[in-house]
Image (cartoon, rainbow, N blue to C red; front, top):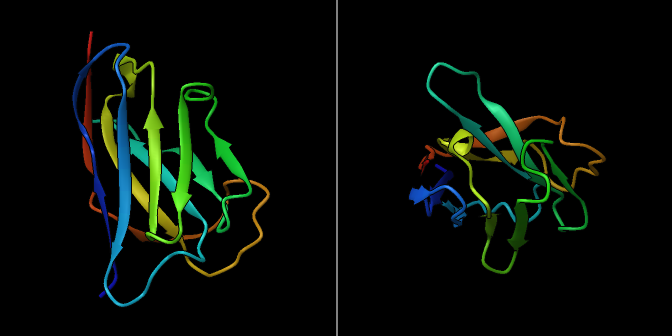
Length: 127
């Protein structure tokens, strides 16, 4: 079955950078789906981080990461990225990639139905 797989997490010092990648395994690609990144820290609810429209034309960010994180995609590679700069200890969390439940949705915000999720990759930022 289709699976989203995140990679690129790790341990970094505050102020450092990481780039996360999300790729789809299986017979169905997500090149025509809006995509998003979420994160969840221990004891906290999962929160939205960033989203990108299916064609990459629109991006949305949580206020907490604006100016520091950049979401992008390469549909030819069926991959979405999250470039994280100026990392802070409060960015520590498991980061999840998610895909829209349908193709070609015209998004004007990040509040849409995510139908597919990855297993997550750990990001730890030390102070």
